[in-house]
Image (cartoon, rainbow, N blue to C red; front, top):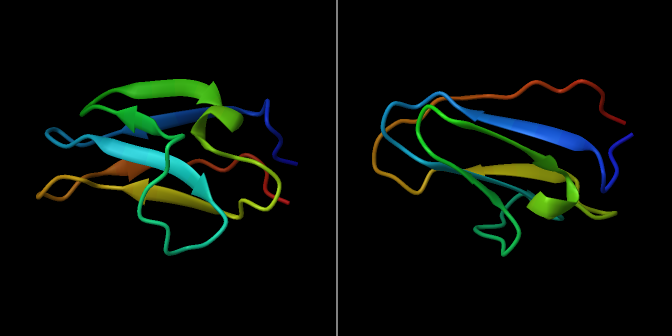
Length: 80
């Protein structure tokens, strides 16, 4: 079960775009104050709480603020 201290790894496979990852209570959220910004060809390890997770946050939003296609990898180890 996902909790505040759950380790999260975010990998940006894009060659040119940064990606932003954050949790949200609704699927249409455009932004969040708590998010992980991952530059092109980099990855980031953090906790779920640091990217905005709290009880009721059911969606992981991946935001591409750039103008070109970006690639990312999402691996879900366990979802409840």
